Amino acid sequence: MTEDIPFFARDWITRELEEAIDETAEMDLEDALLPPEIAEAYRAMHPDTVARKTYFHALIHLQSELIKLQDWVSHRKEKVIVLFEGRDAAGKGGVIKRITQRLNPRVVRTVALPAPSDREKTQWYFQRYVPHLPAGGEIVLFDRSWYNRAGVERVMGFADDDQVEAFFQDVPEFERMLVRSGIRVIKYWFSITDEEQQMRFLMRIHDPMKQWKLSPMDLESRVRWEKYTKAKEEMFARTNIPEAHWYIVEGNDKKRARLNCISHLLSQFPYGDVPHDEIHLPDRIFNPDYERAVLPSELYVPQTY
Image (cartoon, rainbow, N blue to C red):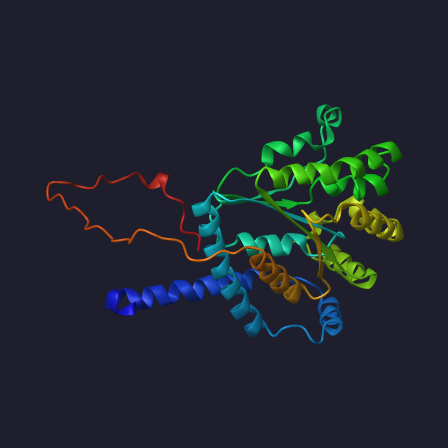
């Protein structure tokens, strides 16, 4: 394979691959802006975490497999939904970032809906999710989903008992309808301990790059930890159906959670290599009479760096 690459291009390709690894590393500088004592306390809580080199090698391998899965889904016109639920600060967003990092956004997209509008509150509960369902050849990742009703809406009092009961009656049939229509439905719950969530919230408070992640609702969830636990247990009992299983991801160790979730996601599909047309770089056409226009300097972004 490398013999087909011109010698002058090999160093450039090597640098590009190194930059891809650097980009992944930058995403994982979790404690760069934390006070040293908090960063040290967090590391002390995870003495057996995966070594960074091992983690990056495993992650890049899994991401290469995700590209194969993406191609397989696109080629076969498969329709896939992956739901990500869990405690606040459990790591849902982190794993979604790593899944989508090297994929085609036209094939794999993330849906993270805001709180329902006044109009949406009067609609059929599932209605605002339906426009985001996948067409053939698409994977949709829901960063929180219709299970808001079984969790935050229930615990925080945004849904009454009758609405919650109606949800539990409806959601198994709703998901069976999705599956009957040819959509694969995979549901992940990210689980962390009380102590781990407390530490992650403290880290967000002290990290100016992450303070936006902390909402008043997140802080209130600390007070209502046990209510969330009871709500989660009933949700599993009433919505873990054969057509759409729940899978629990142990999330206390962020690196292991990401690797384990992506590995498990890949295992849910009989994907393989798909035919691709051979790609040839065409020769550039040179016109000896063409003169490139000189553009005014104000069109250019200043060279600040």
